[in-house]
Length: 141
Image (cartoon, rainbow, N blue to C red):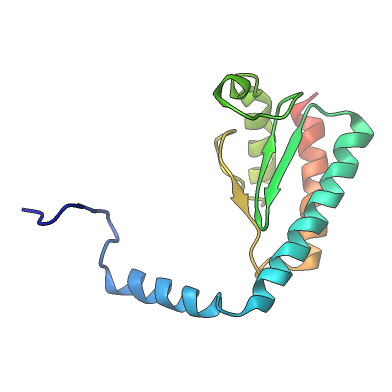
């Protein structure tokens, strides 16, 4: 029986391997240089995507905070629940599957966020922009 005011449970809760991985990740993230790298790479990704979206007038909004980002299939920015109803989930699904088939792993839901990590090289970012350009064409064909 749980004790206390807060109950938390999960598959990996308290698992020693999971906890060790979490601790090591937090130690690595203590290096401020990592955040600079992630910011630079996310900015490069968005610069490339913005150019593609503007060139083709795709109804897509980009949202980013640091290395966390969303690619929103909507003609207008989504600022609340009512706006979220305008998201073109079907087009996002085509985009997602095209990317998945080409080795780019995005969230499967049109409403979720993705992340850049320090493991993503500048070449990975450039390749991702190219693959996303093709995925946009596929999604809006």
